Image (cartoon, rainbow, N blue to C red):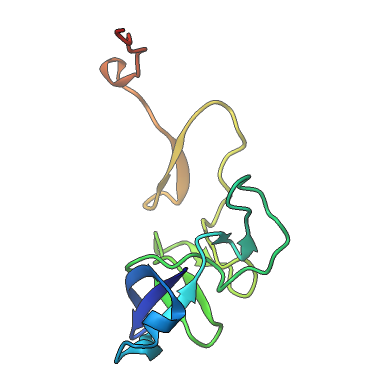
Length: 136
């Protein structure tokens, strides 16, 4: 079994798991392109350990509905998250912000497009997570 993405006009409209022989029975079989859920950032990851395993990456990234298929480069990548972000075409096919994510400091940041900056999230006291008691 393998994963296949149905692509119409460069946009992924469906993703399914099937045998190649089954996909070939479709009238629109040419629109179905194999993808790998073990591929991200043009690196193949071991499905058990989640670590790079040195195997060949398949088409840049795992296809997602609404994502893009670039037929010229034979890669999948997600839609652009913000107008200021750029795709690392030809390398890892991942969108990057114009400035890097802050170094780990215990805070969670979100991208603020109007200021083109990473802004720390502020939590209201009532939004903070509290431990839950698990009853027997």
